[in-house]
Each structure stands twice: as structure tokens, then as C-alpha cells.
Image (tube, rainbow, N blue to C red):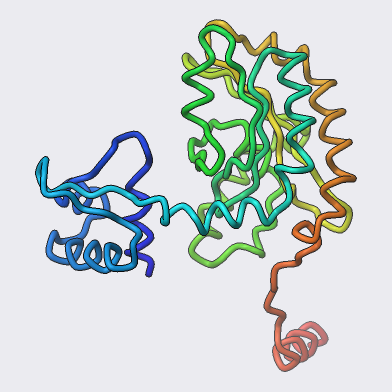
Amino acid sequence: MDRGFAILERFDGKRGSESLAEIATSVQLPRSSVHRYLQTLAVLGLVDQRGTPGRRYRLTPLAGSPGAVAIAATGLPEVAHQELAALRRKSGCTARIAVRAGLDALLVDQAASLAPGQRLLALDSRPGAKLTQPGCALRQALLARLDLDALTPELRRRGRAAHKDLAEVRERGVATQDDTKVCAIAVPIFVPGRDEAIAAIDLVGAAPQVTLAVLEAQLDQLRATAERLTAAIAELPWAQWRPYKRRASSGRANSAEQAGKR
């Protein structure tokens, strides 16, 4: 399953199709193995193959249905979209909301700015996209107060490294991104009973038309929006879900207690 998902994630939308050689190189598996996985995915209706050009593969619309259902099931688009649209009108920038997916930010909804110079950015960050860059403001806002104990063992080491570098974000409660292509400012959203962010919202724009100074002038409005969304999100059944945490067995707890007494 892990290898099958790795192959599906190769289809990032930036190219219309992928060859067997390209996929095998990306996932670092032999071509014969990748070919068998692709044939299974094709039988399941998740990928499609065309004889020309070069026997290339592409995702089918069915591949996106589980993710689309999961995003819709959160209820976030319904409660957040009007607030995001208001942010867009006031700032002229794209406003987005994301949740954490592993150690990445998963875009759930956006109110896209179609101002000059901003259209391509809106197309590149559509709902359902994962933001994986370490400098991404949305990702930093989501990871700053991450509960490391809730991560799987394979993510815990990477999560600890990411968490360590976000001390300033934890202190300010604000994450910023300022590079040659994109400027963004993001704030986390917390609900009662949770120490880590359940979601995060941002304002983002394409440089050089949008600068960090322009976005920081909207920080009070961004924080006010986060506060309004907190109450609405806290009422969602999705927000009341609590992930399972394995507790230490009573035998281990007693052993630890006796060791402490000794």
C-alpha cells in the first residue's frame, strides 16, 4: 500500500502524464515492480494508460474522490469560505485555510485573488494540494505547536526537527514567508481542549506585486478572522474527533513507579 500511494503521489498535476521510467526513478523502485503496481492501479480505475505518446500514465478522476470526500467531510469549506472571501476583498490577496497532513499542510479551501500577477499562484495552490516546503507559512503555523507524541514513530524524528526550528513562530503566533516568488503570512487556529493547531489560515500573494509589509498590515484582520472561525470550527463533528493515543500498560507504569521509589 505504501508503494502504491508513493506512485499515486508522483502525479502532482504539474505534468499531464508520467512514463514508467519517470515514475520508477521518482519512487526508486525497479521498473518491473512499478509496472505491476500500475497495472493494479489501472484495474482499480485510479490510473489510465495510453499507447501514445510513449505508453504514458495519468490519474483518473476516481483517484481524487477519497481526498475530495475527506475534505468535504471536515465541514471547513462551508464554515470558512465566506470569511476567506472577505479577507480576499479587503486585502486583494488569496486567502486560504489548511489542515495538517503528516508534516505537511493540506489546502482545504481558498478564496483566490484574480488580480494582475496573482492568477497563476491561485491555480498552483488549489484545494487538495499539499504544501511541503519548509519555509511555507501555513505549514509552519500548523507545526509550531505540534504534539510530537501523536505522530507515528517514522514521523516523530522529522517532526522533532521541524518543531525545533519554529520557536519564533510559537512565540509570536504568526508565521511568515518571504522569497523571490511568494509572500505569505499565516496564523494558527486552536479549539478548546487541543494544544496544537487544528487548522491555519493565511494571506498569500505573488512577489513582487505583493510584499510582506503589505501582508503584515492585514495581520489584525487575519487574527480576527481566526478568532471567529475558532467558534465555528469547534462545533464541527470533525473538530471533536480525538486521535487514539496508546497509553503505557499498568505493568510498565507500576515498574516505573517502583523504580522511582527505589
